Image 1 (cartoon, rainbow over the protein chains, first blue to last red):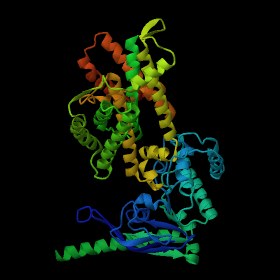
Image 2: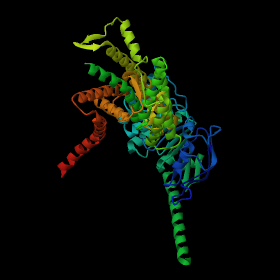
Image 3: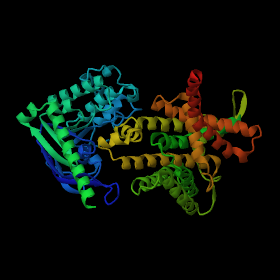
Image 4: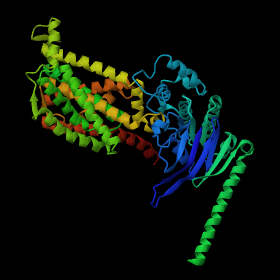
Amino acid sequence: MLELRQISKTFNPDTINEVRSLREVSLSIEDGSFVTVIGTNGSGKSTLLNAVAGTFFVDSGSIHLGGREVTRWPEHRRASLIGRVFQNPFSGTAPTMSIAENLALAARRGRSRGFGPALGHGWMHELHDRVRVLHMGLESRLANAIGTLSGGERQALTLLMATWLRPEILLLDEHTAALDPKSGDKVIRVSEEIIARDKLTALMVTHSMSQAATLGDRLIMMHRGRIIYDARGAEKVRLRPADLLARFEELRRGEQLDETAADMLKRAYV
Amino acid sequence: MTLVIGALTIGLILSVLALGVYISFRIFEFPDITAEGSITLGAAVAAIFLVSGTNPFAATAAAFCAGLAAGSLTGVLHTKFKINGLLSGILVMTALYSVNLHVMGKSNVPLLSATTFGNYAEDAARALGMTAANMRMFGWEVSVRDVSILVAVCGAIVIMGFLLDRFFRTHLGTAMRATGDNPQMIRALGVDVGAMMILGLAVSNGLIAVSGALLAQYQGFADVQMGIGMLVWGLASVIIGEALVGVRSLGLSIVGTIMGSVLFRLLVAMALRWGLDPNDLKLITAVFVFGALVLPSLLSKLRSRKPQVAHA
């Protein structure tokens, strides 16, 4: 269970580049819920994910995860509760190390790392079975360096790594945005499969209306650092990409109106 | 032949330095100039213990610990106080110069009358029945003492290289390699990147100090100036090693680094024999490393330019 209580974050405060990325966002996600997040550029959707992951500390408000308050936990400590897949396929794996070594690193997420051999006996067996789930033939290439794999393969492996130990929450940050459509689809299918199989709680940022509409059981739309729409249950099931596009269009028109109105006022009074 | 044995021995001793530089420079991509202070620190600490009659192994272990401390300090300056990596190293290196003078009490400590690992090696050779002062090897007359020291150093390097390889395959060691490879990823897997870097620099400088301790025992003195140019020396060894064996695997890189150090020392010994002015040695080493750093990208640029010329 993830609970955000009125979290705010402003980047570069009191400068020209001040950006109020999150404005008193409150959100609570039940265990086993799969939430998709959409929003315009700069709406704060990635910032929301990074706030949960601990990439930075929030200015105010509190973050609770799995019954613990983690607001002041540094990123590496929160990692014991969180699995992450990044937008950039290069971000989630160590390129010069082998597939087996990368997975061995993930198998100790948030645990102590001692002098035991990383690739012990028995481990390679378990590895083989779990990598096969990806249906990419990677199980026969476990000794290969990750750097030799394609972006799609790397994202699928990162996903496997993030969920190797069951995370309290899985954070997916536009994890198919940098892939070609075919591998993107494949990674999405694997994501769905793993989330359903392990009944994971997941928060997925996406730029794709169809992904947002079809995946998960709840949808959040963000705009200017706030959650402006939250659909779940039957409402989420009925949502179509066209409905989401219509909402975005509405937002855009509302803003244009604001700007022209401001212009008119300026011209009239200044 | 004596010249070759001497060069091999020094090359092997400095390969411990090269392994330390490999950790900081290749695993963390952190050119850690603390090396120049910590090699002298290792020599100074070992020398002081040896002069007071301590067992050479204990003295070398003490040098290792001193190096650990120096490396951690650089790591703390860099990760906790956010000081630029190169500058952290320079600060610690500069401070170590005074520390080394204090440790030794003077700028040079002779070890000619102290018991060093060389005496142990010689005793071992004698126990094996080589009682004469000289022996014949490949038709050359060589000193038994020199050969036994070479064998002892060689054994020590093999053990250290093996342990280092093992270490980098443990849970801790793989996490350390991943920290250099992709900090964002390893942080997301629950590793404190700062702590890992401090630990890595500690191990790196610990090894470098061991190299200093062995060098002081071999050459018979510790000198406050002996660290100058040592980082570039280590870099040259690492680069030659990569040219020799490539960068395909960790074990190969470790072997390559050791081979690189030995080969480099042999080349230097030959050049000096043929009349190279010793004063030019550091200049040539620096130029060599410069060339090794620049050539690969220069070559690939030339190669990629060719097809464009063909189009035009």
